[in-house]
Length: 119
Image (cartoon, rainbow, N blue to C red; front, side, top):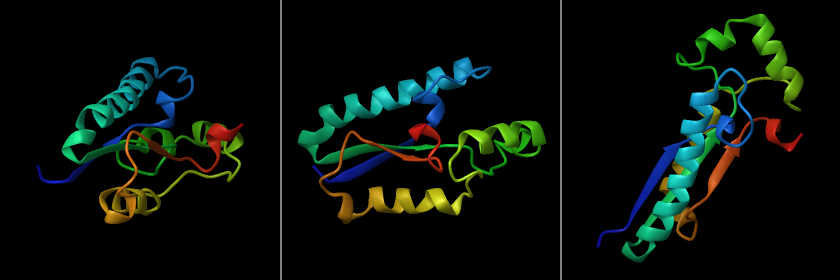
């Protein structure tokens, strides 16, 4: 079997409560569970399975939040780095997970959230 790396995009909404985003949070929690299950099931085929769980990132998908000052201020209040992320701050994690440097990493989620989930 050829070695491989599957990388899913979850969210901090799958780790913490996601008020007003319940279905979104549940779907992201399911991705985290799927990551662990597939990591276990595919390890013998030399396929690593990991996820990235970002906080708020300035993307087209998140535009409604990023463009709302009240929502952005709430995110900043809950985030020790007091800002939201940029897409290039997430891309490095994907490159790492896909690389040989992560050859012994499977079943994990890399949380990139400016410290939001440490509080």
